[in-house]
Image (cartoon, rainbow, N blue to C red; front, side, top):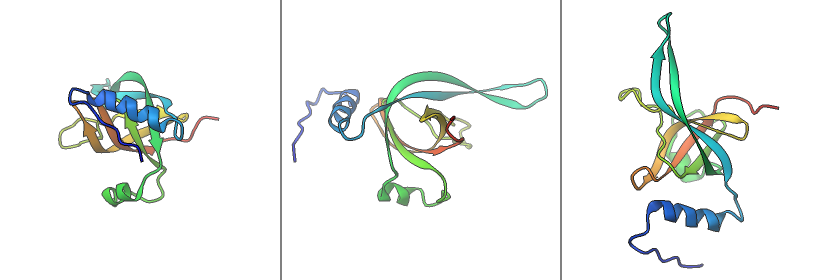
Length: 138
């Protein structure tokens, strides 16, 4: 097992980049687009349409591990879920605060961020739980 020493002045983004290089040989990063929720607009008929800001980035996608499953016991087991590490802040839908609902687009599908599992720095990188919202396009 190799030890990695991190200088105190290293940012969370630098640590994310280092971890990505080390794990990339086994689990390469994939291109994705983060659709960060910016609120919504009211249509003439009174309905709401969500609005987003798009950010292209590289993410690491993993299967949901046992310890993450314990954190999300209330989510239906048949859902297609992944854990994603991304070099940005991402927010799950929070009805009480009326914010979040960010979406990641990768593997040809939209993935709703349903839970923030961990966050490092001031929005420098996040570990989130996502659930597929649609089937991949053929």
